[in-house]
Amino acid sequence: MLGGMAGKGQRTRERIRAVALELVLDRGFDQVTVQEIATAAGVSHMTFFRHFPTKEDVVLSDGEDRAMAEAVARQPVQLAPLERARRGILQAWEALATEEPAVAAVRRQLQIVAGHPGLRARSWESNRATHQGIVAALVDGGAPPEVAEACAGACLGALTAALLARGPRGDDLGMVVVEALAVLAAPGEER
Image 1 (cartoon, rainbow, N blue to C red):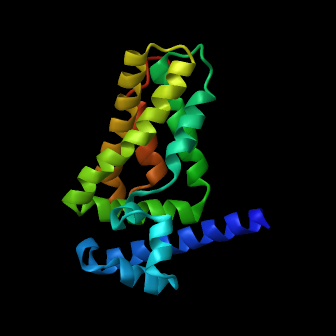
Image 2 (cartoon, rainbow, N blue to C red):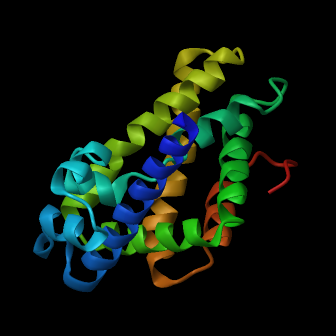
Image 3 (cartoon, rainbow, N blue to C red):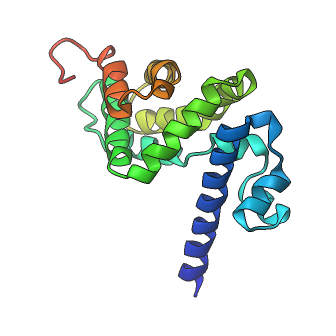
């Protein structure tokens, strides 16, 4: 019974997010209200707020924070911290790229965020959770905290800059990520 409820809750969350992204792409972020999103998704505004604390969160949340940190934690600790972070992020994105609905949602999200200054700023704030997860994974693997901070920041900075600059144009998201993170590969590492 509980598993069915969790599945239903996740489907509701995904439906709200998909509807919100479509409405915002069609009319603009500032022209769409939470009530309009809820109505179009077939839920109450209270259900919307159970899944997303704010309208910004429905556009910015993607659930990849934990996946990236977990992928970094799975990298061999013998690798340099920057390489662990780089490879982990690449693996998390490879897993995402196999799910076409997820890629389409990321592309819609990028279009919205790239076109709205307030959401771009908020996007940097929301990346903090991902950053903290990657730092924790690197520190757990033996990296000094200041090194872990720098490595996570470098990788997420390259990723975010590339996605916001090129992803919304229709470029292959997988290639955008690979190219951005290849810049950080040490000589001799696979790119």
